[in-house]
Length: 600
Image (cartoon, rainbow, N blue to C red):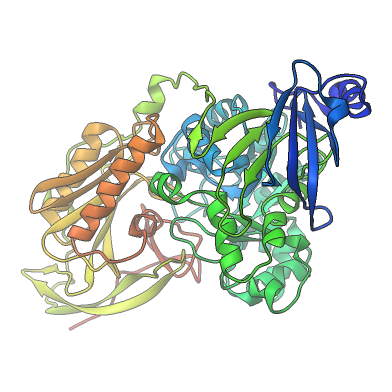
């Protein structure tokens, strides 16, 4: 796959051959490094690397024959030379940044290749939004490959999105230059049932010779799982335990183990390699969802690799799972993922393979970062005005919109409650006995209210329910137009008045995240692009996000990265209980369910 700002290997071959043979000078030579060879899983001391035209030309003990008068010579001084890191599955929108600003944020952390699925913006703006993400991704100084979203809506019949993706859209996108495959196939019940549209999307991708992404969020590893794999998805990142990882690789999938801002699924699955001894070639590390605060303060794929090593993985094996394995999975082993002749010259210098400090980052032969500082321009598109006007509500809301009426004559109700699980995407389907005051059901103790406010078609719809696990106290509310995957508006609170204020504030600014307490706003992250992203620098967005996290804590929340849990409460393809614009969704049965079980 070619990008417009680097020549193909075929076009570059004459120059590569001439430099490697000593007949022409290299652009850059990195001398005296420790070459981490992910093909052979070894570290080779005293190695020189020669680069020309953005690709590696020579890797060996002495590159003196490649040096000319204009060659830049970098002394590695015994540092490890590792391939640029690859994120095999992620969503740029989760960083609350545009592709350009996301690239600028992750470059200092050594990420040089990204495989992203823009299904967040697809749910809001359809194919138009995907194209904008694709086009800005393609002009970045690192490799950003786009997976065409497969499921908008993620669960047809259980939610309504701003736009829908069709099999015809998928077939069209397969012709775009930066499309690497099909994004995660979240409608796993549809694939298992032989749904014609889902299979048509997979077929269009396979006919184009590209990779089909998977998403199997079910503990059922029997015939249903086999049917899903038979349908064509080639990888999966929804595993949460060793058995999940083992089942996937045994059936020929790649097991993608994620460490995002709130998903900690590496430690529980990497034992398939470290203890069970399975071949690591079919395991891949990824982030899935990382918000800007995590990236700025903790890192990106370097954070994931460090974590895998801390979980007992051999450092070079961990690097394989973040470089070569990813490249091979997407058919790009001859382009990226290793420091070997012909590949794109994506290279990191680091002093230690366990703590993995990122001292220098080279992408396509150019030094793009030194010691935490990006040194390269990341071009922006001119995002059109219509993408900044996506919070469509017919009117401001009041506390009346958030009243949950009890059945007539009831003094209390037994209600279904969405139970948040810390550091994992699944929720629990809980119940709670809740009091009724003047005919209105009230949250109590750990149980507070949740509402989904329709924001695509200005229907005025509000669906109310209950959620527990955040630990909120006092009178508060938190609202967000990031509401995977339909991206309506999610509001969680203990005060209906504050819930109305938070909702109306997001309508006013055109999207984002806001936290309120006692009638006053504590924090705001403005996300004007599709209600999902900011085009401001990552450090500014991270600072606003840090204040948002602090405000949640001030309201009593103690969960790790609770914002990510908040944003997934409408994700109706991950068990057990979720909320949509159509009602409460039982994701174990993939059907709408009633809020109340019984009354007294």
